[in-house]
Length: 386
Image 1 (cartoon, rainbow, N blue to C red):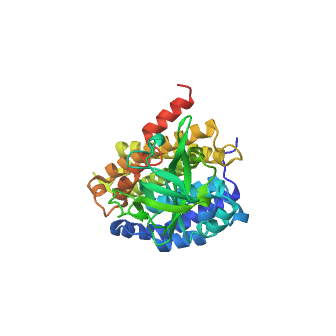
Image 2: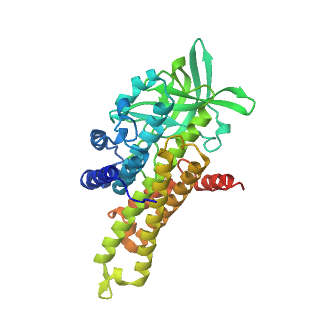
């Protein structure tokens, strides 16, 4: 069993680490304070090929694998989780469904700009009364005169309201079958009449990312905007969420590592009773726990990412189990790391002058988005046969 990254993966990790340290980190505090989307950073990530990392070269991608994408997300999030979620959502939730389920015409129309990072595509699943409970989806799409007419609402949607947002793929009830509602996926480009991007949220964290609610009022899209087969939306978003959960776990590892980096540096500088606090056993135990849990999280994330990326395995029960475990463990470990980081910094950790305050705010949503910790535990238990 080989736990080493390939030379190509190491090169991607190192390139992203340098970019995050030199470009993202210096801008992170300002983006967070001003609640500002980093257009220039996104452009540079596009130039590096990060938005096309796991996609084939013939589609305009970089020809890498899914683990390489997770390495990039980890390093970017180590500098700013808001930028990390912008990359994660754009690739895993925006481009990936089009790449995997789209027609040749859909791919030709949208993927070149998306994989280059010049445009962003969003994914709309969650609603005011439906998220994990997909059967409660209220958004409806009816066929009229060769078009789909959409009515409904989505919430907590990333990358839908920027100047470079190109559209959103939504799930909607398109009929009923023997098992309940028939759920399909539809692509809605920006500027479509009846498609409204509402005012952005006032969020606890991820201030440098773009998040809005959406509404659809008699919103008409052509019949060819159906993504994948009719009634296949449920299966499609399960596949989409499996990859997304692993990528969120990678984001969590990046934040956990950032918490450890900041805490270790601070503990070596801060002195009490005539010596650095890093010499105090109480601080050492916190640092040791942070280092251990970060490495454990990283290991299961890499294993899940490698398994997900193998041909034909992305929707197997084993991969779904690994995805749920990695997302659950990494998100909760990163939250513990953020708690310890603030505690090690003492009163300074409560001040926005220190990045650990931002890490603490940013990391909580990792236990919620793309399936709460409770949902992950339910899924794990179900896959265990419980």
